[in-house]
Length: 138
Image (cartoon, rainbow, N blue to C red; front, side, top):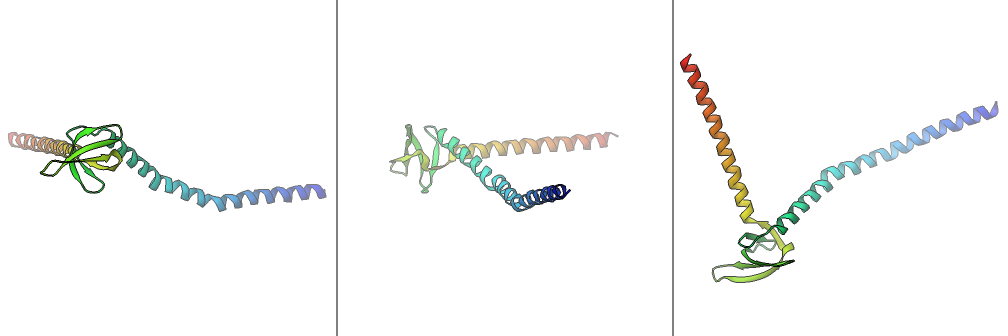
């Protein structure tokens, strides 16, 4: 009988210990998960996009370096590019990792988005005119 009471008390203690561990480490695990989804995952996505942009730089693209130099790519090798800058056509050789932005692609994306927005606005205008014409006919 004494053994049964002892075993029941020990079982209850094990359950309270596991509950205490969960209450202790639960918030810590939650914080790690939140940090992953708020900080780490978006940063990895941004890094992958920047890497893809740097790999897809073509000859003739206008780029901006991390140091603020703007130039046009005239030669591309495995890990460097040669850019032409300024009115006197100075040439600089820089690492691909030093490219911050591909201005040509950015401008093309902005133009495509503007064209898409203009197309949407035109469709909305046409729908409004159709509704207005229907009301006038009735």
